[in-house]
Length: 178
Image (tube, rainbow, N blue to C red; front, top):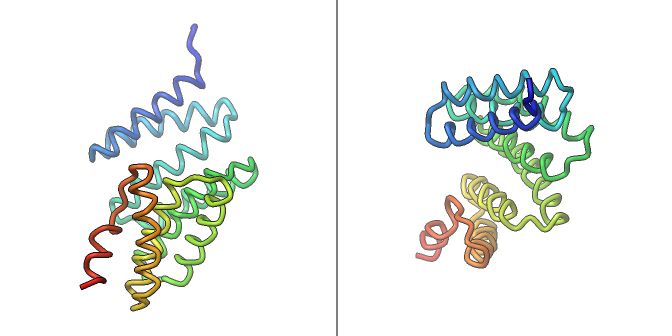
């Protein structure tokens, strides 16, 4: 067998990501599970962490928050051990979303703030914009409209500068300025 198993695992994960983004969750899950098995067999912890996170995204999108949380937490623990700062920030954002969906806004905001601090340190503008957008949504739910406007304006400025779309920035600002 000539195959580069690590490369195969990465490719399976990437194809799974495309399938997930197109709503083909069953096919994405099959590809992720194959990638996960290869990464576990190889001891590729970074690959395991990335794939667990992606499987968590499927569970989250289908409302299976407990399973998504379990997968995110396992992924986060591995990323922390590896010192993968960007991965840590992404997974903190995902865990924050679960807390948000379940109405635990304080915990969600704490996780988003931790993610934001990491991404600011790394200079990851795209994820900063997304995180600010997530934080603004929670501030909106809490009736903190001044904070919402400030966060959305920051997210929109980044979005316009680097071309990264966010969920709520432009429409949220328009609503708040009425």
